[in-house]
Length: 336
Ligand code: SAM
Ligand code: SF4
Ligand code: SF4
Image (cartoon, rainbow, N blue to C red):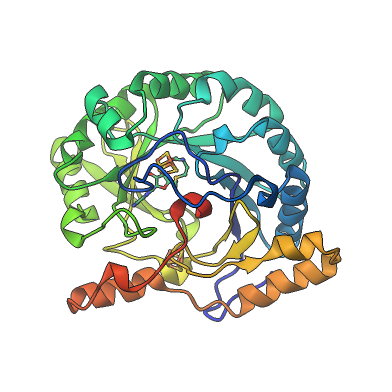
C-alpha cells in the first residue's frame, strides 16, 4: 500500500469516463461550451482497465465511475464488465445524473455494477429544469426506480444545496427517500471549477441542514463509513433509513482523504481542487511498462500533500478567502 506525505493511503479511484454532459447544472458546468477534450485523447476502455489494475496493485479497492455524465459514454456496460472482473476490487459504483439510467440500468447491473448514486437536487419539475438547464425530472425519477428494480442498491441520491435556490427542497427530498428506501446525501455547495461563481453566501452549512431535518425527523449520528468517507451519516431514530451530509466546506475531511482521480484524458489528479494533472496516458501510449507506470503512480501519491478544503476553511474563518485566486481543473473533467 502506498501512503502520501500525511500517511494517507491510496484507497479510492474516481475515473471520469467523459467530460461531456447532457445537463448544464448551474453549480457545476453552467456554460454551454467548454474546451472539450478531443475524442482521440479520451482514454479507451482498455487503457482505463490497465490503469485500474495498476491502482489496485497499489492499494485501491474501490472504483467510482463519474464524469461529466458517465452514461453518455457509449457502451459503458462494456467497461463495467472489464472492471468488475478485476481481482482485489471490493466496490464498483457509478455517479450519474440519472437521465439515461432507465435504458441502461439492467445492462449495467448484468455487467457487474454494484450500485449507483444519482444526483437530484429538487422534486419540483420547473426548478429541476432551471437548475440543470436541460434536465427532465420525470426521466431521472424513471431512472432511479429502474436502478432500484435492477438491484443497483443501496441507492444514494445526491443533492447539492444552494441557498435561496433549493434549501426548501431538503425536507421533500428526505421524505421521498424515506418513502422509497433511498439514502439521501446532501452536499455543501463547493467552489469547484472556475465558472459557477461560488460565494460563501450561497452555502448552506451541514449544521443547518441537520438541524432542519432533525427538527422534523429526529436523527442519531453514525459517523463516517470506514472512518474516511466524505459523508457523515445519520440514522432516523424511528428506524426509517439514513441520510448523510458531505460537508467539504464547513467540516473538511482532508486528513482522511484517500481519493485519487483520473480525468477522461488520462491525467492523474490527487485532489478535487488541483490545478495540475500527471499524464498517465502519455506514458501508456509511448509504450511504458506496467512497472514504469505503476512506479510513477506511487511516486506521485507519495509526494501528495493536498489539503485544499482544510486550508480553505482556515482562510474563510480569517475572511481572506478568494475563490478566484486559485485556478482549478473543471469538475466535468475530474468527476465529483
Ligand atoms: N454527472 C454526474 C452527476 O451529476 O451525478 C457525475 C458527475 S458530477 C460532477 C458528480 C457530483 O458532483 C454530483 O453529485 C454533483 O452534484 C456534484 N457537484 C457538482 N458541482 C458541485 C458543486 N459546486 N458543489 C458540490 N457538489 C457538486
Ligand atoms: Fe453534468 Fe453532473 Fe455537472 Fe450536472 S453535476 S452538469 S449532471 S457533470
Ligand atoms: Fe481530498 Fe482535496 Fe477534498 Fe481535501 S480538498 S478532501 S485533499 S480531494
